[in-house]
Amino acid sequence: MHSIGDLGEIELDALKELGNIGVGHAATSLSRMLGRLVVMSVPNVRVVKISELHEVIETEKIVAGVVTALEDMENGQAGFLYVTFPESSSEKVVRILLGDSSDEELMDSAIMEIGNILSSSFCDATAEMLGIVLMPTPPSFAKDYSIAVVDAVVSQLADKSDHIVIFETELREREDAIEILVMLMPSETFVNYILKMLSMVE
View (tube, rainbow, N blue to C red):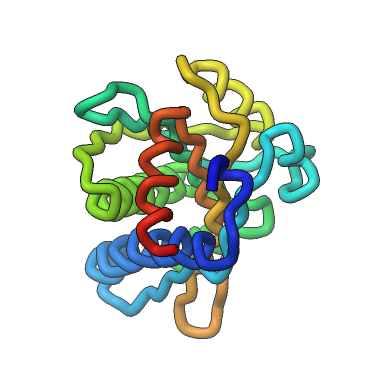
């Protein structure tokens, strides 16, 4: 295996497991915060070229989400984590979790909080599986075309990667299910960490 864009089924399953550990921690935090059961899972993982992102997500629609920069304590900049709610999901998640989606400021605040919990949980799970110390910066709220956000953060990577890992995440509370996309934009160094981890499951 020489490229993160050339993963087989076993490696993608390992990445999905990483995602499920991350969202599992996030679901526990949300359940405690809300006082009721929230279930989260990653039913699918995709690795796509950034230039082909428009074929996978609705890049022409404005979406809300949070962006977190990741710092590897040994090698510095590791990449970015972008937690985004597709247009159909943002109102739904706030209505389900808070009961009211009429206040735009409240919606943005709720999405920021959920994104923050997801980012922290993903960061902790990833660091544990890779055996590194990974420090997330405080997340920034982003409301823009998803491709614009991706282009902006990728341009900040010193050693760019051509690929993005998309964890297709589902948040379920009672009978409602909400789609969330967690996108990992790794630096080249961070890609090497991931490939090393995946080589151990072959």
